[in-house]
Image (cartoon, rainbow, N blue to C red; front, top):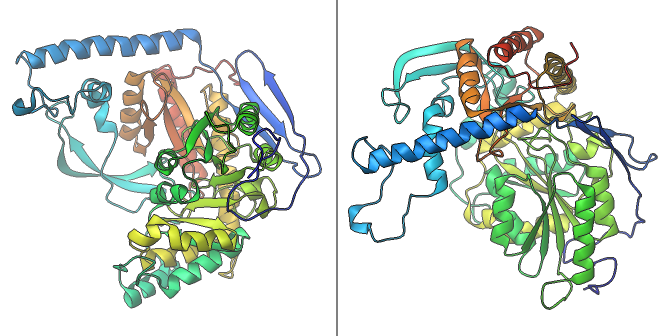
Length: 537
């Protein structure tokens, strides 16, 4: 355990690393008054990758009208609640039981008010039923509502061949059955659909071992362990790594699964501004100097939690500088590559490969198989000591059912495709096509005058809509044009930053992308969505 007033901290029971000197990082912030672009370079002989991300601020009138819209909706919401309480309007929402009228309200809170009076108006844009494989085109079941979106009924009609621009199908591996999936069918016939046991009991199959060995080879680490659910991979394993007396530094935009895992751990949690290295270093320095509150004893461990690609912002973690900071202050680094594994890097090995870093620079690798691999589940990878520790102590290993064998085989098939072990170059070709589609789509939207968030290499492309009425109108008009999009608003985003989130795929053709871009351009003019003051054409 370290002296809390020293400039480094020796951290916990995770594998030790060789002492490394601090690598200085240069940071340049370029501001043109409108667009804030960050170009952050690591040490020139180690990190040649330059981070270029754009987070343009909207015009002031746009923000004013957005908040005014929410304000007016709130006033009408209170008026309608008054009508409901007076019996003049039927209340379809959950209500308190008369027998519990003296209890603390179970349902009445602001989020419930928000859902009842605003979300319900535009609820038809979410949870649509899909009745085909989530490939580049899919089929949507048509539905209508007779009570203003409180309930829906299906008409029996199918909207055929809708362009799918919202699924996380980055490599196009979630598609209809073809001959390349023959091994998945064979595993289904041999092993069945489920395991009906946990990993610590009778739920470890040879397919799980094969998958974990191949995954460790793919990630260039000593060992890996797989889990049946991606969300639970974070929420049940972070508490195993840290606990009371430990300190977590978490990016403010981390996924809910990371936030839940951190809270369940019992460790002290401190958030730092998104991708802000100065903020993180200040927090690290203070943690070393002052130690734990009241006692000032040294923290048992310090763990930094980040994501590879942030799914709401489309930004990529500033990994070189975070690695430099964690080496400088002897903290551990846990990275969630749910969206980046299989989608960035020359061979799809995620942000570590994207920046050309050493595999040992990251202590805990986490990722999911639900995006690029067209499957389900997640993994933790790293040193063998770490993985062996999780095999005995992970809540998922002890209590959760093991991964389905056909799902494991689908992941194995996908890994072999990316590694070229299938005897083809399809994996590399898909990665290259994904990069080309991403650049084309992002650059075209920027030229049209839309505000686009994130990194130029991120296949997750958020386009800002701001006003809630435009969120609903945009999604409805796009579906009328047979284009399926995902729109996102509060509480998943800040109140005034509602957006459409596009996800590019390697199997999107240029014709599909042009069709989508043409529709977006038309709606941008119709709904006045071209907020950018940096339009290039």
